[in-house]
Each structure stands twice: as structure tokens, then as C-alpha cells.
Length: 493
Image (cartoon, rainbow, N blue to C red; front, side, top):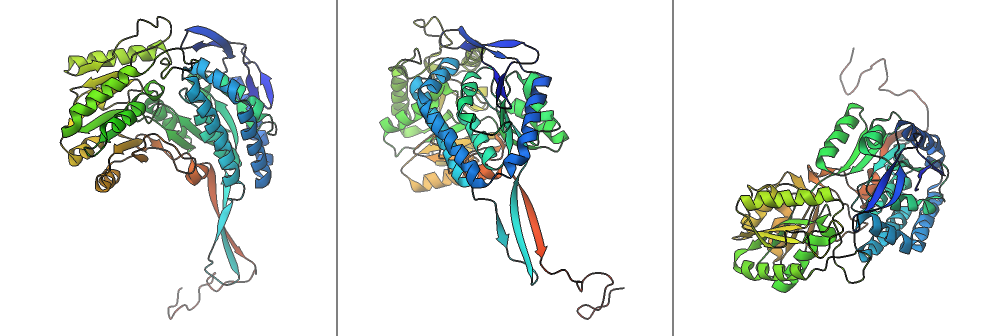
């Protein structure tokens, strides 16, 4: 049985309760994990709270060395971590190998960014004075991590939080906790209490971390509905939050592109990890005069995608995470087809894969913005394609959303690209290379897609508070103190 990690020790839940972890490709139970509750959360937060001062005042260069060591160990354990990610989450092994490398890179990046970024000196307003701004950690950060990229989205929170001098408590998703617990071997290099992991469900652990009196900040990635609950609970306590929430990302295809190249880019953006990516292309707008050719090629490439055991070398797509997610996709397809949409390909459970939560990648045409498919986050392998008459209509429809996480455009027309970039609300805007991340570039959402940014220097700032220090190095009476005197020809009484 996998165990929690508190104060540099493997521990069971105080209640001794456990819950199973399922392989979505085989529907088999692969392990059990402690079901943490209030006492477990208290222990983890207490350990982080006790360790916070020692970690905060450790010289930045020493913290950086420990983060580099974590990155090195992660790379050494890349093979086994990739297998665990595949077994518990269902992404193809080739993608999980990439994820592990990205995790290591995040720790390396923040090791360097955080070691000497401690503030700035500003110009004083009087002689014999010095003004400077210092950056301080908040204290104890609760990191609540989703299931689709359990290590990467953990690293995007934990690496900058540690680099900024915070201690952390991680709650992985109850669906994919094993890889995070396996990562403990890399975290052993940290002093006791600096990093802790509690496993359990939202009401048992997540909510308690958000409301705990000794957590100073909450970093959460998940659904808009849960994000609202986190924000409400934290807001009542005036507690800092970082929220990376849902998306319904638009994808524009202009008529000056190579249709084959554009279709390949769009298929990848739509179906990577079975569409279980917060920045997936979820609604496609294609210029009318290339629409027939583009849709035909998109359908052809979609039908070529290989579903199967995600451990296999010749597989493009694995399963959905759970049967409940598959059933949600099926209900959504029933709804939109009843409203007049057409399923051009896919739309069924593949009969050659009787085990596992597999579903055919699906292309839907004849859609419009009255359909929920075009307005809400799908988080599944459905690509709705809508034909538009030009860049103005494409931009207007793309921006007609309550979300603002990401957006993509494929074009060789610089004016089209810049018009779309300027007029579509999106935290990340991709031109001709969808979904690519850069550790040095901020990631996060506008509108209801979230609060704050991960990655880049902005990601470090999310985990640091600001203090202005005003220093006068000669203590003497100031002419503007009481009692007031003649000043600039005016007497104050």
C-alpha cells in the first residue's frame, strides 16, 4: 500500500482507512492509498509550519542546490515514474516520459530563478535614506493538484513555492496519487517538514487544507465549479489563492495555410491525452473557402489515430480517466446531435477494446454557439468544427466565452494573427504552434479561467509577498513632525 509523506516519513492515515487507485486502461485496482482526514491534514500542516522559518532563511544558493538535486533524482527515476503515470492516468508512455522531463526542468528553472531574486532597491525621497523592496514567502502553501498531468502541474506549483521560501503540503488527485508519492524519493533531500503529501478526497483533505488556520496560501488547479468553492472559502479567511481553472479554447484556421499541416496541428491540439488537457482545442473555426478540404483531412487523420494499451509503442491515445467521464461525453454527444449537430466520425466505444475507458476520437460538424459543446469545457475527445466567413467573424466567435485560458490561430497572415491576439481574451495565445509551453513564459487564464500565473518570473511572484523598507541611517528630528511650523509660506495651526 502506498503511504502519505509527512515530516520526511511514510505514514498511514490516522483513521487507517484506504481507497483504491484504478488503472483506466484495464479497470483493475493497482494499489490502495491512505484516505486522509482532519488529523492527517493537521499533522502535515503542523510539520510544514514548524519547518517554515528554517527554510525561509536558508540562503538562496543552498535552496537552489537542493532543487537541482531534486531535478537530478527525477531524471534518474524517469523510467519508473513514467510507467506509474501511465498505469494510473492512462496517457501513453511516450507522453509521460516527456512529462517527467518537464517536471525536472521546472525544478531546475526555479532553482536558478529563485536563488538571487530577493527584491530591488528604489530611489529615496530624502537624503541619507535608502528604500528597498524585499520579497518574502507567505509561509505554508497548500498545493491541490489535478489528475490529468499530476506531476507537471504539481511541479508548476511546488518548485516556485519552494524557491520562494515557502513550505508546502501537496494533495494529489485521488485518481492519480501514486506518481506523486513515488516522487518522495526525490524530495528526501529536503529538510524535514518542508514538503508533505496527504492523500484523500476533496471534502476529507482538500477543503481542510483550504480552511486550515496555518495554511497561508492555496494553489489549486481544477474545475471552475471547485475553484469557486476554493475561492469562497479562502476569501472568507482573506487567504491568498492561485487558481488555474477550466478552459474552452478556440482554434482558428485561416485560408492561407497548408491544409494538411493545419489539419495535423488541429488534430493534435484536439486529441492530445484524449482531450483531457485544460488548453485543448475545444472549438474550431475554419474559413469557408478551405472548410471542405480541411474537414475532410481532419476526419481522415482522426480515423488514423491508434487507440490501445498506453504502455504500447504504437499507440497515440489511451483511455479516458474514468467511466463517469466517458458517460459524460456520451450524454453531451446525444444532446448536440438532438440539436442538429452531425457526428462526422467517432462517437462510440471501440468494440475491439472491451476493457478500459476508451472512446473514439470524435469530429462534430453543423454546430453553432447555442450548443453547450461550444460554450463549456468538454475535457474529452470531441472536436466541433464551425465554418466562418472571415477573420472578423472568427475572432468574434472565439472571444464569445466566459473562459480565457488559451487560444490558437494557424495563419501566415501577420495581420490576422495580431488582430486575433489583440482581440481574444486568453492567457496564452499560440500562433502556428498550439499547446507548447515554455518554463520562462507565464501560464494562466483570464476571465473565469483563473487567478494568477504559473511559470516564468510571474510564477515565482505568485508565491512571494512584498515588503517596502524605508531606512533613514541618521536618527534626527524632521521638520515635518509636530508641532507644525511655517512651511512654504503657509502656517499650519
